Length: 285
Image 1 (tube, rainbow, N blue to C red):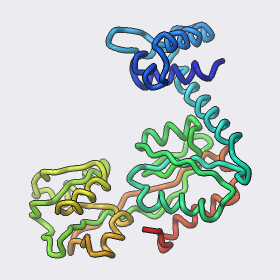
Image 2 (image 1 turned 90 degrees about the vertical axis):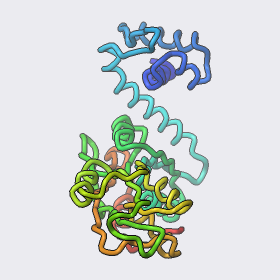
Image 3 (image 1 turned 180 degrees about the horizontal axis):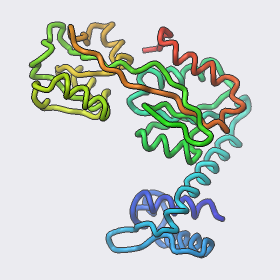
Image 4 (image 1 turned 135 degrees about the vertical axis):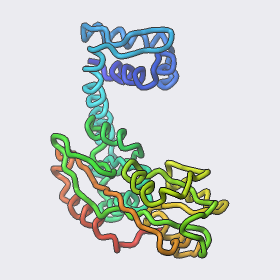
């Protein structure tokens, strides 16, 4: 089975059409069509329904997709590891939720770089669903995410909960009634707790689904918002942000999930987990 045909099949599924898949892969549409036909002939099944509006998976295509992603992921990892230059013995592909990079994600990354010069590190950012799928398909070895459930050959390492604190660019910001309050969506549990606490506060004019974007807006303009403590810390130390007095603090679980097969020879891994649990360790600004 040709790995390029599998990669083309995945590209068609992810983009929704043969035209967009050809643009992503920088080949002609006829090449994409030929690769798909080759794969379907080899499998002996029609994998995609074609229509003017785009493509959809057939039942056979749905079954193949998971295996295709796993095989493509393993191939990507194999090329990466076999191409390592002299002095590098292994590779760790790390997937990180974009909200967790500022703090535990950077700490994990920097710890490997400083403590293990023989290891190459590849980092990918993604949503919780992206990270879960990447770990299943084998395109990443370990992920840093919010609440997760171990699947098959995976292990979950619980980390100290993330603290969400109300910060403002002004030291005298009121707890209730700040017209510059910005709502940051930290997930379903947070939305429920926030609604219970501030049930009579009205709807914020501005909202973000990214803590980093909300922080940048506050620093560029003004405002207050609930932000991860690890993200806001250096701006508190430089007095560009101030915790709002008497504001409730929320917490959000986070964890490191690792593919056991990938980590079976990682004697260093447990030490890195312990480092993440030790939140007193400093991180470069």
